[in-house]
Image (cartoon, rainbow, N blue to C red):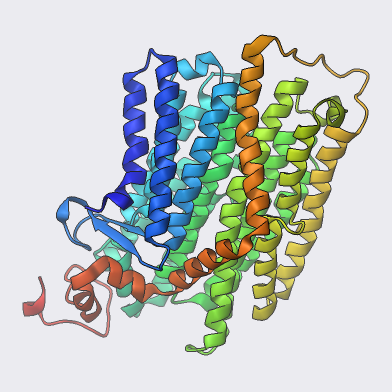
Length: 546
């Protein structure tokens, strides 16, 4: 077993168990939670380093070699997202110490957060499609309880919408896995990739891919399946919303990227236009929804939907470029790599920036007593640093140079123009302008305008304890805003990593070799497909089957 790849899953699981064991000791739960978050960040950095040279790190559970056992796989993209998982974990844990009330902490806030972190790491690292489903269910269960923690009426309403649509997604996902297993006889994604490439039933495979797209699309909140997100993100405490915005939708987008580059890359001329339409409509509907809102968290929730469209834009452009080029076109492959690099950059950028904007909205609510724009005003005079931190993250979300958002959009637009996806590029540029409008609206209403005469009384900061709590809320905001600016200024290392992630996504054979090892050639020959029912051109003699 390779501890480097297992640690990002085991650490949050162990933290969950320890926090449950310390159920009645709130202070010790905080200590263990912070130690667990820091350990998760350290292990994720170690994993990112292990994959930094392009190595695909794999391990097999209980010594059962792939495809017969359960595989864990880390390439550059999954390691990047596990790194985001660790960064969000530390920021959120520190923020929670100042923002989460005693009641929620006493009813399992810390173990639930680490259960979500473990599930996210598991989903990013699994090499088995059924285990991806298992991690999704753990994530759904823990996040549903987090949404309802506190038992307020608005929370329950939002949680019901959240869990209903996500259960529908789980049902579709499970049905799709059953059909896939019935067709291929395997659940290992590397093996599935080989078997599906050799199948001569493209219609059935395309139909299956659409089932997976719907299941993952609900998780990722893409058009027209995003209604649960703006209905639920404004209901729980801000720390929980920041966790969801920073990580949960990324799992859905990652799953779409992984399956449509590894498993369902046979009918790109059909799937690419579908993904392009979904990407464009997700951008446009999300940003139009945000433009109509006047409460900070609702605006940010709709913007989360809009930004998911950008994440899918890179995938759709990559598939479109490959679908409309000669099979061995080097130019098309290079353009597809750049497009996928843009998606990878945007995943990381959005996890940092959107999580930080939600944390800032919580700080604004703590300082001003409300997050309704009509009741806010004058914060730039009373809390100028809050305004500066908001502006740094907001401009990055809108894609203003030299932020991470700008570079992500620049790479996506460049690849889109090279691929000839002009309508999608035009939509992305228009959405950027509307995003800037929404962020300017928050800035003007909350920070710049004079306070309204009828604004509610601001909560007083009483004594050292209150100042410490506000300091704990502000510290991760400063760190994440600095990370946003720093990554934007020194963009080259991030782009190099993202480009490597894009190249690996297109290198299905490299993934298959790394996971299957000595079984790779037999998988290619078809001798590992004794359970397979998909007709292929490479039937192997029975005596060679294991």
